[in-house]
Image 1 (tube, rainbow over the protein chains, first blue to last red):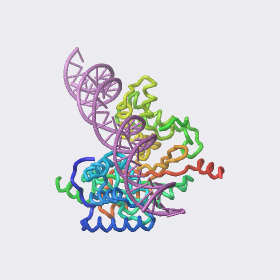
Image 2 (cartoon, rainbow over the protein chains, first blue to last red; image 1 turned 180 degrees about the vertical axis):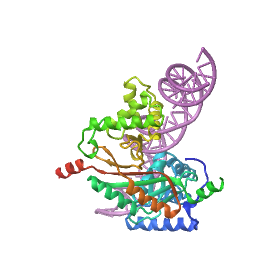
Image 3 (cartoon, protein in one colour; image 1 turned 30 degrees about the vertical axis):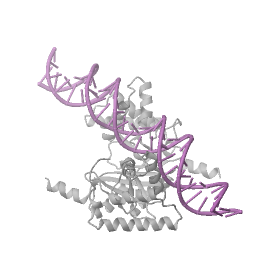
Image 4 (cartoon, helix red, strand yellow; image 1 turned 90 degrees about the vertical axis):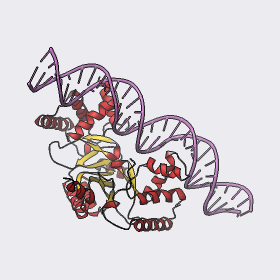
Length: 167
Length: 167
DNA sequence: GTTCTCTATGTTATGAGATAACAAGTCAAG
DNA sequence: CTTGACTTGTTATCTCATAACATAGAGAAC
């Protein structure tokens, strides 16, 4: 990752503090409901991801953790991230070797990630139609899908507008 | 990667030597048409990928190259692979940190990869419907897609049958 | 409340994937 | 044959990720 400041709030103006807090609350409820141990490191990692509102590398997360008195070795971050992904509270963004908080904890969903190449914002879009199309293609080949990932790189509305203005 | 032998020929019985040779010929024609320099390393790397008919890690490709007298340092493999990807003759499979030869060189296509978790075979399926679904979702958010990748992990028909038989 | 057990956390060390930077060779255009 | 653009080879290093073991804390059984 890089030292950029937090980018474009995932393509839409919104009360970010509220959005992050709300999602955290839902994640916490979801964890409780399923009897998961939502420990301080894990919770803090999710907060960090939610506050950034973008995909972050494991070492970037680790930097913040160690600055706050948690362990400063890679496994500390990787384990917390793995837990969150496993629990469906965060997603791994393969194309960036990074992780992002899940915006819809508790709901069943195969996420689509729209990654802005300019500001690094990552939006989690609805995948249902995309997934349906994929199921059809795979079904025709007799392939049984277990996990699917959809990622697109391009320009978010804000950066797109900026790019056109600069012309 | 691992030392497995070549896996299941991408889900369908076919004359693999012919399929690989044919694809190589088409790739060569495509490269010539576009004035690309299809040098020995680059061509050999594409052959290696075609013969394997699965996704291979850069270091795995490098091993073969160095055994054949080419350079034995990572950039040798990465540069050739980058060239092929850039030229649309190969694809990067993010979920595996690996590369696979393109089965449809010259045709415009956003590939969908169906990755068998058992035999490591990788099939490149038709993405048009999937891509269309994604375009609609992204369009609704004002996001301009430049590159998209679709990857699914699961069981190919052969391994699926074998798994059921083992029950 | 003590002890036991299980899980989570912290730490060390190392493995795997990827690239920056520079030197040397190749090839076609002029 | 010289120039300039591109390719290849090599060195060194960087980022991402995990195996393996030690320590500590939470919760259940008694």
